[in-house]
Image (cartoon, rainbow, N blue to C red; front, top):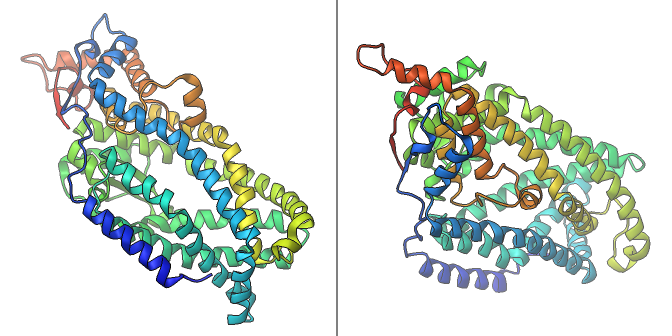
Length: 466
């Protein structure tokens, strides 16, 4: 496979031209509340009720915004299916038309070194599958995001990021794939076990280098020097045993309206990062609640726990690959011109089996991640003491997440707790810790010492700029 320079280039140029002409209009408004207030039902007091407080927060969201976010998120259910079926179709196309075998043959003509042959095959495979999947990718990643007012990029800027991602995957992905195929060729009986271990090591390496070397390719990180924001966060980090000294900001607003933050990396690469949307749109209470959540992932060892979980998942997948590939090659290997397990031309078949495995595992994967997110929520509200900030964050996330799904929807499709559940848990915490807010109210009375720094701010009605 090559770039098919004339045909593909012309097609991409046409799409680029159409996309640029359609991207000049301002993105549709997200229709969320211009202000987020702490409703009367969420004020602390002897009659405080978590369910009533939750409903009051949800009532602040206009019905049009609810319908919009529901439509966006429910459309994602179908995209999971279409992404899977589209990927299956591409894999079967590469196998049955013997394109995969031809890509391997071309790589073998270029070099006799197996490692380089695999990398050359991977570069061809990656570009061809991207071109074949481009119609769905451009709809899902660009046009749909603009349709719902979540994206800020022009088509040209979006394609620029896509190009960076492809080049990065050609290089790093090529090395990773070449290592895995070298293991398969050398360890023909136990390749599936050692391949799983190597895949996990590669995943951990990606987590390690991501914040320092990968993220700056797409966004510019800079130290955040606003003490109004950094002082509470660093204090929260120190109080929870997180060894960081600086807070970073990234310019995510050049791509999206979404708000996010993370505590990422290992050892010397670990850092706290906020995107500029969160800084611009979030209240101090909301930012502290979000950072408490992100710190919860670190303190609760969610990264090591996830590594253990994914080791089980990956070993299971490789065991399935061992059986499925052997069975498929016995039936169709000659037709597909695949010589054996160590032949790079088998990659579309590997992708097919792996996609089927992870598609079936969707509810399991989502439940594992959702459980960790719930744990981080509870840690975050305990650490920050900002239940109203947590509720405000859930409302902002409701711009692209369904707030009140059915239990079955949440089980299958949600990798985070629903907005309703997140607000309810925050309000439940507020009700069970009412003495903190009562103390804050007393301290705010004339002649008394100043208010408590965190929950005291939630004791009186306030308006938060969105």
